Amino acid sequence: MAKYKLVAKKGLGQNFLADANILRKIVAAAQLSPSDLVLEIGPGLGALTVALAEAAGRVIAVETDRSLAPLLAEVLADQDNVGLVFGDILKLDPVTLLGPEHNGAKVVANLPYYVTTPIIFHLLESTVPWRSLVFLVQKEVADRMVSPPGNKVYGALSVMIQFYCHVELVGVVPPTVFIPRPKVHSAIVRLVPKPKEYSPETDRCFSLLVRTVFSSRRKNLYNSLRSIILQLGGEEKVRAALQTLGLDPLQRGETLSPAEFYALAAYCGKDLNDSTRN
Ligand code: SAM
Image (tube, rainbow, N blue to C red; front, top):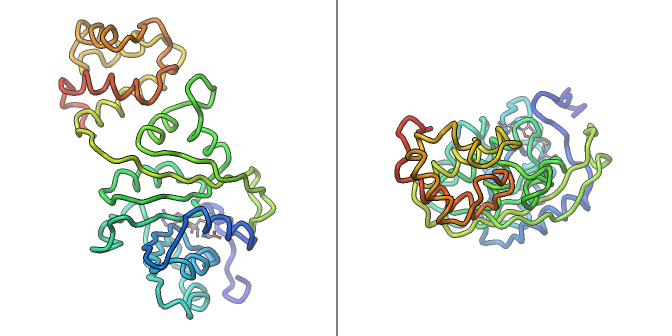
């Protein structure tokens, strides 16, 4: 970095990995083989990119900070299987980035902490059928991803991630392995998407239900749903849904499992008012 007169940009979440063991652990979690195509978000100084390029068939690395271009060109000079793209991953379509071979591609990333959740959802909402996604995230985020219902960190992220993916906490990573050091611990998580067989209406209703319930987590389920009752098809419909699904209107919404949220969405989703699109 000194050679290129670079300083880590806090605003871009630049905490660079400087520990060969952790790099190995991340690459091992992705279970890479020479036939794999990998999307890396935020190559930074390229340490993880080199490790990925050695284990996978091809790596597409997307970096928003163009000032890293000369350094990355030098670090990746010997890696002829790496494609570098400069841009904001949130504005890029993974299908276009990866090209016709995108089926079964993998994601590996030490994510910038300021934008972790939007990036994960951007990737999961794309039409790429990912084989797996391995992320290094703040430990607090990893805890939310794997939390069961009833835990105080169980929230919208837990429900959405766990419904669409199998999630595994691979290991905890201390601040000492980064330059500069973050204030908090990090963790490696591995997501394997479940086969998709859902309808867009149900998905939309699922997302609305989850957001609504966790924006008023102390309310009971029925009172939480009152604010969106018309969108869900009216009072009668919602009462019938709860009864059919064996859900107590007086239980707190935050106690519902991901499958229960989805079942409720499947029941009410068909009547979802169009105003809830997006
Ligand atoms: N992969 C490197 C490593 O492990 O040392 C760097 C990881 S660092 C935590 C996050 C990287 O993501 C930084 O290089 C940062 O510039 C980049 N970044 C931040 N926001 C981004 C975005 N929206 N799209 C693409 N890259 C981004």
